[in-house]
Image (cartoon, rainbow, N blue to C red):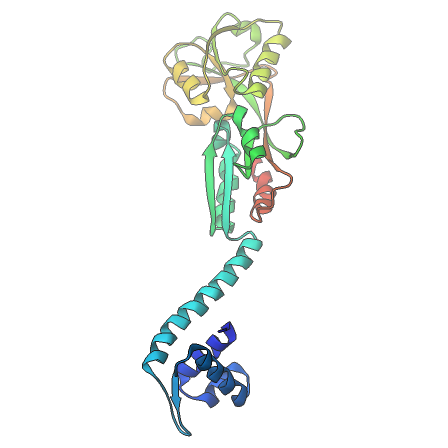
Length: 293
């Protein structure tokens, strides 16, 4: 049975064509080196090196075997290095989910630093509805995710990383556009565009609590899932919306924003399964504080 030591010994002898020099390079004495090469030839049933008292020369079989033996040793060395890199979290794959709101606030600084520090890790990002993220993390479809903060969930670590206030998004020709602070009574009769409760419960709860605190009842005109869609509808003059402050960074033409009086806040949180053993995950979760930038 050929072993890796025999291959390394043969390669060194083949490259030097001198058993004495090869022994010095390998830090072994010459007799054991010669015995290992002879054992390799015996196992293969072919002569790889023709030698006499003064010279060594590769046979045709030896030349072919040298090329392929180099590939075998290089592949093994790379496999060993890769195993060490994976164990250190510097190589492999990491799947991160995120809600759309995070793309304009907490996610980019974390991703940027991770890619700088772990360039060999295949980082896969998946934009997902808040209502679906936790299930995907629990199933193992995602290694971690950024979603709205919420109460404890069995099997998950939940680390708050950002709080941001809600603001008013209105068409740029609306009387309240750019004004503030806006009270609930000032917009209670306006047509409100909101996210359904089932899609983003924490966001909808923050909107409901804002109106409840002002003893006002909102007039919901439309419900739609995505904040980008809400902003686009506002730009067309279809209604107004209460959206996370980071939505102002979209710079959508036809929309102006205003602060809210005693604005409610929503929390972003980094979540992951407590039993996830992906070696790259701890480094990503340690970067969670960057999401506050």
